Amino acid sequence: MYALVGLGADKPSSLEAFVECMCQAAMKRFWNGQAGQLSTDGWLVAWVLTRPKGALLQVYGNSESQKQQLLKHNSLGITMAGLDDESSSKHLEEWLADAALPGHVSADAWHVWWQHSAEFHELVCLALSHTLYPRQPGSTADSGLVHLPRIAEHNLRGPQLDSAHTSDLLSPATGWALSRELPQEARLSWARVYSSKHDGRSWSTFKKAIERRGSLLVLVREMPDEGCAPRVFGTYIDNDLTRNPGWHGSSLNLLFTIHPGDKLPPGPVVYRTTGFNDHYQYFNYATKTLPNGFGVGGQLEHFGLWIDSGFTNGHSNAAATFDSKPLSTHTEFTIDAIEAWLVRPTQRLDSDDEEGVQKSAVESNPEAAAMLEMANKTMYSKQLPLPTADMETN
Image 1: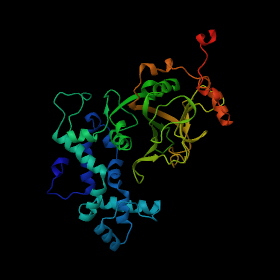
Image 2: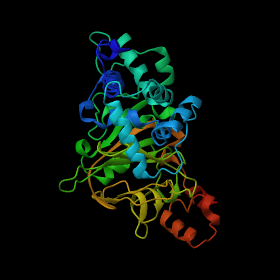
Image 3: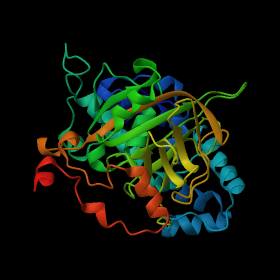
Image 4: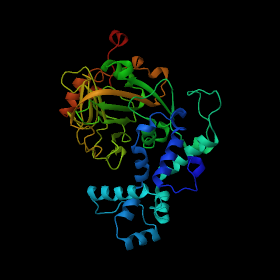
């Protein structure tokens, strides 16, 4: 194991150094074998070390006698009740300090962390696949990866990407962390369908790139304040985005923000739907009385994440849909960059082409339909098609 990550077994090493070397080895296997910007992802090691938060807080949030009892019975699967955010951060800092020093993590504490750290198990598998099954000589970045059958089966190596389409907002480490939060079928192949840097700052281009395409990962970087690093945040959309004056979508949608490395816990913070309401996604344009843009969660005009069709500004509010906090530094933000990644294309028949679909009378007038729905008016014509020439002659 030490040889795998390049550490000498005869020299004392900290758990932090061990995990850092494992991350380096693993990320070479991830994302078409390109290590990318791993050196700038200082949060990754701390993220892996603190992911089994419940187990760690049970150990570090109790007296010495309680710790030994918990270790003995191994009842460490849930977060300790009664610990506030300040106490949690304090205990996580204590754990990270022990992990940074050789010999300061006991065998029992190591066993608890190892048993509950699914992320580290995946890193080990990725590192093993890179070491035992390296890329073939002369292979190119987009020619596919050689990997262990078990890793292929469980899809631990991350999505297959086109090497020509890199991300300016998503590093390999962040992509790996986020991919773990997505449904299994959304981790296989990612294609960048829009980038404000490469495709130009255009709502029209963005709209065409994301409408009725399939499952999407949308990332936003805010314009930074003076003296503050900009935040990157976004959403995962499970169902097709369709032009609709009302709420639609799936409870599998996510909101997330990427915390800077000086925050605990570090790395991506993911918010899942709560069942409080079904305000999963909103996508509308070219209307006069309703918001025009792309929104996720919250309420109209007070979205959990909102990108205005003006494509300059957006906002992020606390949203009961996801029990989420504002994703951006301030509620209102200026857009610095946007990317959209297609992570699971929708399979369509030729007959399903939007231009060939016969819309109902109400569907052809979405703004009027929305006003009727808000007035609780029954729309009997919702399923009736528009009149055709054949119908008129009859």
